[in-house]
Length: 505
Image (cartoon, rainbow, N blue to C red; front, side, top):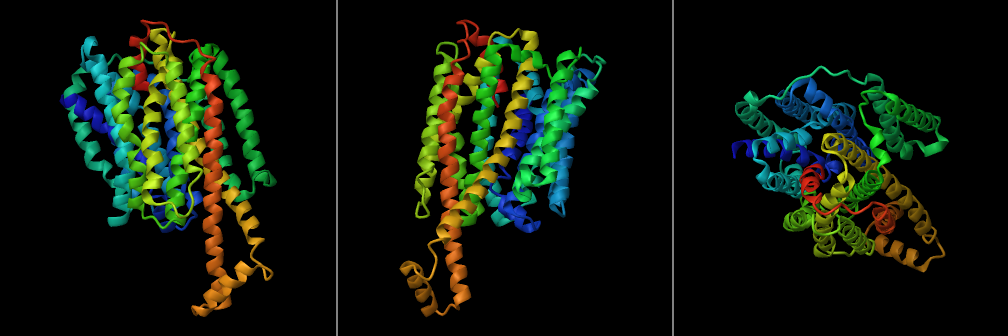
């Protein structure tokens, strides 16, 4: 019981940090003197660093031992969280978030491994159900807690709260598990593969984040980053396919189920995460919501997932996972279609209802797709396959954030230009508005500034609608991809669904 509690606390701390910063972005960006668009680096830097360290978990745990590596990861995570809270500027904060992401990588895979080693095989399903609950509650509490802390204390405390939780979890885990250390083997590290992985992912992420600021391919810097990312990716693929001990086993992509499932999971998660970042930014910057109110809008996303996930886990061996995934994509498309019809008069409950429905989609999204991805893979390859699919998913989440915020900004600029065409001396509405604001005591410049703010509000609302609508269409386009995979054989569901319940989160 204490082992489950300690491992769940460490996992909770990790998952909480992926969502807690979302609603605090405007406050962090404002306090550190950067634009909210640049503030998304707080999320993407953590995601990319996390994605890089996840595939290394297997090698590191064999080199240092599972319990020792878990302890090191928890303590480094706590120290980097403390440093994030102390960061004096955005550059420093991003460096500490990268440290935090690297430390967080092994936490989820190792918490699953240690938890399953504590329970008899007959209770493996119960262990994973308890563990899954933690990973579903954390995204619910993250925005609520982040919003409340930002409004009532200050944003550094969203990082400081990890300190007591982390130290308590580390102490309990060491007391319980230190005599159960796994066997240590000195394996060679694929240092060239690791360097190429960091190079191409880092270059691609920086290109996506800086592209908006530097006007994309009109900038030599963006072109250079694009070339580095492309050459790095090609070199990485060639090296990993010829290396005896690859850091990432790309041969798994020979399996149709694996590549189809991993692609659907990654693109779907990237879309989901990108929209999860855009919505609170829009609410706080242009709808007058506080961080707490934006957190309340985002929080219910996990409530329905909490209800439906055990049902999905119990029936994953009986029902074709492709049908469950199709239902998830249709529900995500419905949610985003509903959001694409928002306007600046939308009230709190109108905005919240799609978020509640989205929880249903999440329950039918993760477990079936990971089950499909891992089906037919031999048990000795499951850790590598789970690590690779998690790596693809987390990386896609970071890219999704960058792409969604960039498209949102670009579309807003376009809509702003179209709307301002109507604000001229020949427009009766514009003249009437100017006269009304003038009679209220505003100077012509102040009146134009007020009208510009209204135009901004409408432009960003229309841009958010565009992002939501296109995301809905992409979710529908993903449905045929799922059917490229073969259905899991009956009887195989039990073994892979335990791994799926673990790997999905």
